[in-house]
Amino acid sequence: MIQKIRNKTMGAFKNKKGFTLVEVIVVLVILAILAAILVPKLIGWIDQAKEKTATGEAHLVLSALQADASERYGQGGAIATTADTEVYTRVNKYLKGDIDVAAGTLPSAKIVYTADAKVTGFEYKASNDKYVTYTFNESTNKGKFTTSNAASK
Image 1 (cartoon, helix red, strand yellow):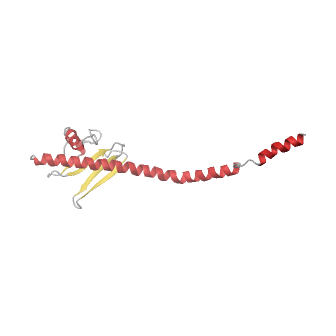
Image 2 (image 1 turned 90 degrees about the vertical axis):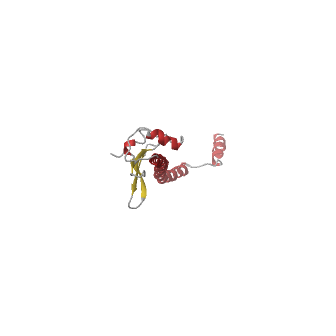
């Protein structure tokens, strides 16, 4: 009688289909290896996206600074280096709410103009806390944006 019961219960387990412990462990190891390969790449993509966002914002700020400088230059007088606080109000007028620049994001003391009102340099702190420095090389007639994690000194 005991043998009959044992055969019936053991037979029920023999017909069950499922994964063995070894199969589950192999799948987990494969997933761990894939994660180890992909996570560093994903982090790199995130950093690149932050740099591109910061540079994009700096392009907008450059356009606004240039528009402000052109307007002021057109009213007469040369512009050298500015340190006035009204620059934020004037620049924000051109940005129309896309970005709100203030003393902490765009230090007016670091905005540099040529005598004919061309923006040749500035530093900007983007919304994602990346710092962007713009410099214009007059010999090549090209500007360059450089991103970093800290403000320049």
